[in-house]
Image (cartoon, rainbow, N blue to C red; front, side, top):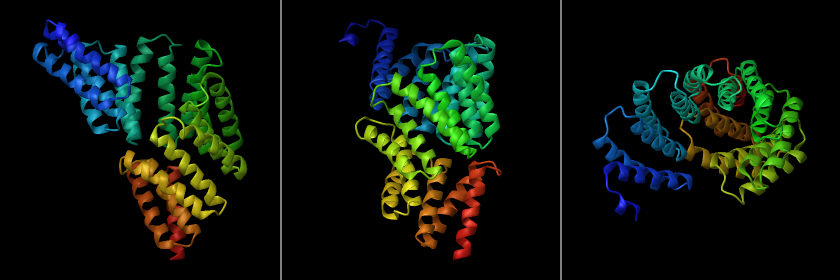
Length: 361
């Protein structure tokens, strides 16, 4: 109906763009791409090559591909968008920073952490110049950089950036705001990586207290924290409490549409818990569920896949199936060598497991 009333090309392009935006909001990504592409086609014919309106459409298509897990396509469109913005906007424009941030998040999802860090830092430099020091975007940016340092095994740097984020939230938001919960969870993850489990647990508990207050009972963000809390209880050897929290996470996952990779994390945490309880049959069931999702959704050399292969290797080692254990640990080592710094604690652990298995063969 709207299209019938549209009298000019720019009206038609605008309507297609808005239809794409609505479909994106509804999670109907293939439909959203179709509408955005139609808008883009008209704009390309009627606008100059460096018109900012073109950049916005490229950027929106990039977001949709990212949401669908089509990361190389997302990068392609983000790069088209940034080319235009670099020509048509001043170098410290916040819009440019958002685009660099989008590219960083795609590399992050691909497990290319040093590339992600490069773009997050580019984005951050602009935010520092163009935004007031207590702006929420600055805090989010600090958190993104901190998360990359955690992924790269540089834990003290990670803590430093999360501290900066918390300081901004403290100045700009009430203590019960979900943004606090997200940052406290980041602290929990770093302390878990540092094997400081009681500290990790206390941060995750603060995070879940905020989320339980601020979010609906079945909200997916609760899943992540319940799963993290369960994992720390496992690492502290309290399997009963670990299973209680993993079950809480599963109950939500079974009732709402969760991010598949979040589901996979819960399955993998359950796998590790049952493996340590020597219930190998149940462990294998959860492992296979988690692996299936992760292999479908992640790049073949994603560091998160290496973690899963390493877990599987430990499971087969426990059941004395050494050739299977070796097969999986080799995959973990190969990914680790390609994607992680040589001193990364994960890679060191994979190599130690490799040696342990080799001695048994």
